Image (cartoon, rainbow, N blue to C red; front, side):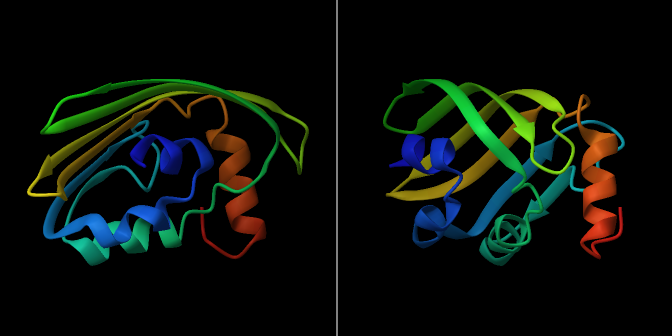
Length: 131
């Protein structure tokens, strides 16, 4: 279920499984406004609900899953073209989920979005999201 949610970018599937006090840390690039630590189920829901990264066309993905009873790690490589500009983007990422009693208690996302940050900021501004 976790792998499927990450690959499809349908994180809403996981909202029910978030602990109320879930720890959430997003590590993108220093200039990314969405980087940083958050705490609580609503902060995670807000992050994924408000995500502005929906500009992909012709995505190609490869993922690997490593898991135990208490930790699930999804490592992937996502290549696509931004629809607005045609710019090719390669996004390598790792998602680390700590799980206890069937709930996600900690989520760490590490992505290198440096190749597309300028374009994404322009898209965000055009959509009225600052940037």
